[in-house]
Length: 451
Image (cartoon, rainbow, N blue to C red):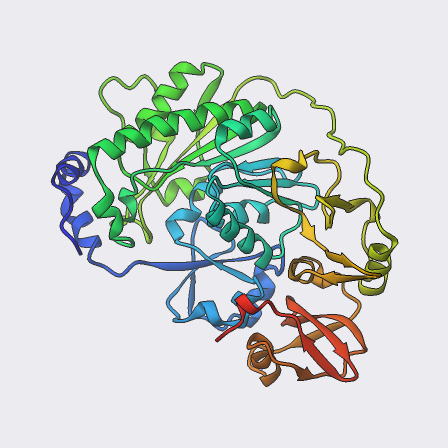
């Protein structure tokens, strides 16, 4: 790999001491690959019964596995959102807090969506995830991953953290701050991070990180938690940020992480002038000690007594076109009509008790589809998110000819009754089809098809 910046190397020698040579050696090793089972679609137990990959369990992630297979992104299980490929070190921060399934959770810097989708798997039917990304092109990628995994009760937004604080004051039980950083932990995996590294960039990142944390505090409920995370080793962006934050917010404390995470990581680093007695509670993930790239995480707990916030109620619903209900009645075995609302004129399916200013939304809930003249054209997200509730299902095996045709955008024969059907692979939604007289007309989006 490329030579490390001289100033960075000097700092790492001071930080690691005798371990420095082991760190350098690790940078010439092959990056570790991993995925998580999407438990919103399939349980880990059921996945392991059909798992075709060569995998090994990640000790600190209940649904996480290392793997070495090639071209996993073209496997039907990936297309069906059954798995999410994610760097194993990056899975660590979302495992740092035990999450109540009814919580409202915010991911402030979310794209491409690894930590967001990991957090959503921990929420139940009543939990809400707001997943934010400031850059529109990256927010589109984030929304695409939420769609592929078929996640319900997710709102994606595209704004800076200052606007988040204005739109969602004292709203969330947990906030993930995966802060933009100098990327030192990614040097092995992304060599461009070496080219972009500078001491000035480290300082600029630290300034931005302090600002983002201040905005996170404004969004947090009394008694809530902030997980601060980076993919860098710099004290200036990690422990010094935490120490500075705690000096300025005496109503917060740093708390320990679950035992599995603690055993799989290293303690936070004390430094001259540090006033945080428990800075060791922060966690460091090193490539020469762990299977994955560099990460840092710390859990900040608001020690004020939790306030009994009144239940949020959405504004009175706009009238829903009868065509939408007729479509849902024909298509689904069951659904909650109260969760059908309009977002900018588009019918979506989401818990109505979470109020969102619709002007702030990039996407919201499950997009049901587009109302046209006297009929509804379903959206791909509807099949992915509501597939298990469909009346008409075409369940295929991952090796069959029909699934290969489907992923290439072709029609195939089926004995499924006429009407809108969900195409599934081993019980997990892959997309939609319109069945007409024994032929499944393909509605898999062109941009997702295998070329």
